Image (cartoon, rainbow, N blue to C red; front, side):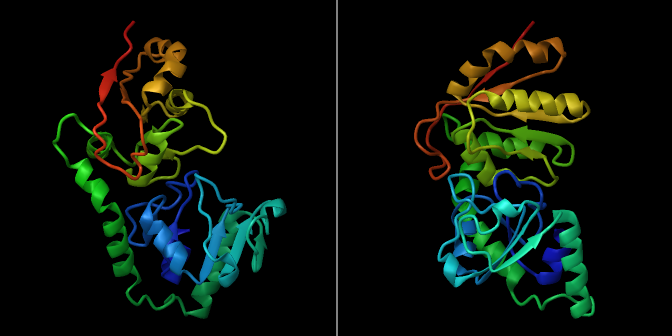
Length: 271
């Protein structure tokens, strides 16, 4: 995906479940949630989707004025083609092989030079910086009580983005983290949504830790989510894992209102 995006000099947006499939420190990466991805969806004339059914909802992207755009849809399952929006060009096949074939063809047609860049990288940086400005201010805030975004900012400072997992819970922790947490490797952020239940975050983080014991694994949950996972808190103790679980009241929609004055506490299960 990186190779094709660079050859096309095309801005990249991911859905929640695809977060991390494209490194979020790449100069062509726009975002997952927020006003900056929406701005690019609005002004785009051609959209290439890979592995997405394009079913709009709270955790994926609707396409504004879809009939006025050229939509190229790559998917392994033909049931996801033309599902919601009109697909002008369908590519049925494995994402990895399709992306490689497309990259090879673009390279061949441009003698390896790719599409002329123009100001794409600068525009992406400007749009992304504007969209995240409010969140970054909250992430650096020393106000008390502490706000959730400050916690996320500090998490990004202490975790190794190449060797860790972060997941959320159903609700505002999902909205907050998916907007601001920079993910650099596939599955470094375990995003989930649609039909989901509170309390899954801890189970997801523990499963990731069991599969990759050398990696740090963090589950961020809210006060309600903790109530759904109390029965599982003995598992990290039994496995001899340290398991801090940040929690806070989740009233309102902090995904659009950073610095909402929520209080953060930490709970560490003990044997």
